[in-house]
Length: 609
Image (cartoon, rainbow, N blue to C red; front, top):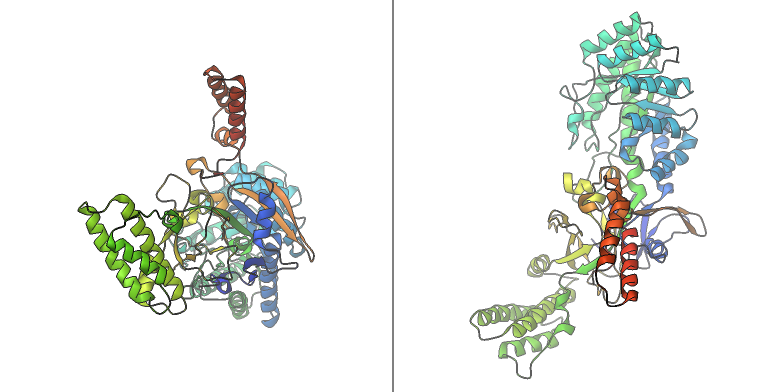
């Protein structure tokens, strides 16, 4: 996996050149160069980079494939899309979505009161707003206010109680009535982790009987003319297209039947989200069994076929695919703070004037190892190590002898791996796994990659540099939380190999890709580590610009955000310090200045020394 599966997951957004990973866009800057520019301003800890052009690319891809399918199938409805805010509500992510999608009239979807307020504030003029999820009277009234303000808004009812509330609000006020959608409870279920979003036991939606009752209620309230959408959703990150096709047939027939029942204003079908993103970086794994081309063609063809058979006008098609739009736009960058086998460096060898005979033989094996004899010498070294450990247990050699032996054997194994890297044996491959390196990363998995911890969701990970050399160290990644679950362990079925670097001489940076969907909004403040410092990177033909800097919260801000009185805490700490004894006034002032500095810095590590 020399290229870290770049051809599998990156959608040609990144390339490797000159040993570094670069943006495959315009002036093609390297991620390492961008990170070094940011860190030159004394920024420490993890960094989240946003690339708005990748959002625009995904929006353009979505619309272009659906437009192509519409033309090829002589479909007479239009294609529309909205971005579900639950996927990423962070300001600069939403700003990128709305600005990059403006030319496509790309809208927003809200699932709570706060998201609805955000949608009303951020949706481009004329773009669609859809409202999903359970709603009370206040939230429905907000939908009326949005319609009165000129927004093209559709409130999707999840149950008959919500429809009754819409009718109640319409009767109580003279505000413009928003469009109304019906979420249907399909018999069809999805696939993958989120399959329970569909099916008869799904959390949301109306049964066939409830749909008929809804039509009756709308007629009685003289609001049937506001019913404009049928909505369904069978799950996020759909791995298989077959359940979607089944759901389309079911929902399409429901739509056609409602048209025949007099729902003349009904004009659109919202197929929800679920368009999958490729997270895996290994050839044998795949997140989905379909392409965006097949996805769009299937939707358009099946809906057109149903409507033609029922002699019903083709509906406009809506999607709410958020993961597909924003996952690729964000990259988490973190430095490696420590490698836990660096205590095996040869510079730490400390021989005596007279060493045990087996240790002397290990020294010779280490010095004379070459491509021809490396397997034989490796076997000898492993055998000597067992003998030396037995001698230590019996008290015949001391701790320094044991340390020297461990360092020598470790280095003999490493040399054998490098000498045979082009043609490894099964034995060396097994040793490679056993000789795992633990890379301590300056980040919190709970904060920045919560789906890995909660769902076992893998994310593409690779170094930003050293990419012109073959990585040979089987890697486990440890975060800086005091929790044993804060680890991305080495998986032989999906192995991650990284480079053997000397962190005393250089920094080593890892990038975690496709983290722009859900990870930020689901991230938790475990150990009070908060959102990384984030930056938006815009790129043109000649250079790039670092914009929208949002630094990670300071320690005082973190404590304040969970309910502590930050000013009181700071005063107490300073007061206690001032009461203590110092040898000199200067020492007291210097210590107080350090305390104030630390309180204003973020909670991530600045050094391991």
